[in-house]
Length: 239
Image 1: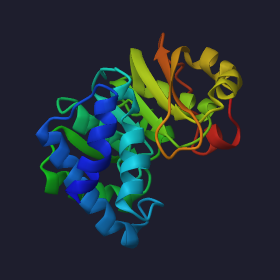
Image 2 (image 1 turned 90 degrees about the vertical axis):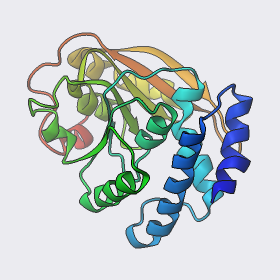
Image 3 (image 1 turned 180 degrees about the vertical axis):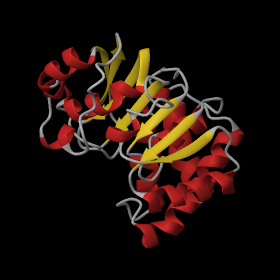
């Protein structure tokens, strides 16, 4: 499946002034093989071809990298699912320590196997809900970057992610074209949880019908101890 990486990803990144080292391209190729092989068993993603996976999972995940962001570690990837965007960002920045968080154990079992097969260092999985993990001493305020892709509204993401970040840490929220509306709706959550929007990085990819954006938020101070609230509330009753 190396041809999908060489034919789609490499030229697209080159157009954006980004080149991957050979080690990273090999990681992407092997991970693509694993994703395609295990998808039918575990329903890891909703794409039928390797080209769709490269376009919608790999390239989309790499938006912070090709937009020029150098990520501070360690990184926590909330609701990682099939390992995105966490592993693609790790492949692009190999020195980055990454923790892949998810409440679905079977998907993390797949990622554990993939990490072992690809011999990826400084990448681990963590099973549990963010509402609970963020109250544990070893994870609270301990990450330099948190990523969130397709896991809920910005208000929900802010409540789940900011407690995990150390002050000055950055949250990267992957959003569609209506990112300004999401920012407006999250103003109360941002004020309560001590976060601020630094900027939005818009981008578009071939084959996608609408422009997308990375909302870059910074944690400005410590998050009040009561947040996040108990499991389910950030989603059902957003701040």
